[in-house]
Image (cartoon, rainbow, N blue to C red; front, side, top):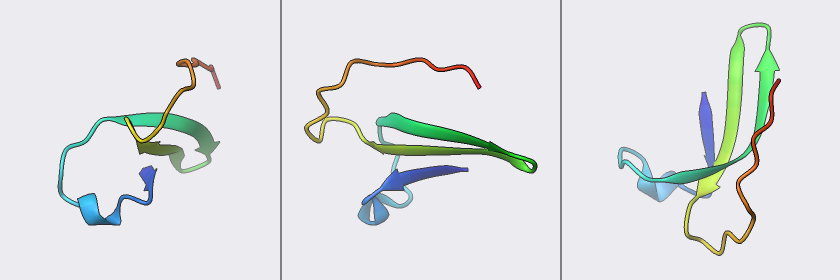
Length: 49
């Protein structure tokens, strides 16, 4: 499941996001993100779970 912060008005649209966190559960993975281009200044990070 992908959860995008403050993006309810974009439901059904295809958008570019920046992943902020990922959580592995026993039933799958949760990906947390925010819409790209909204003041994102962080360099991309890659983390292995």
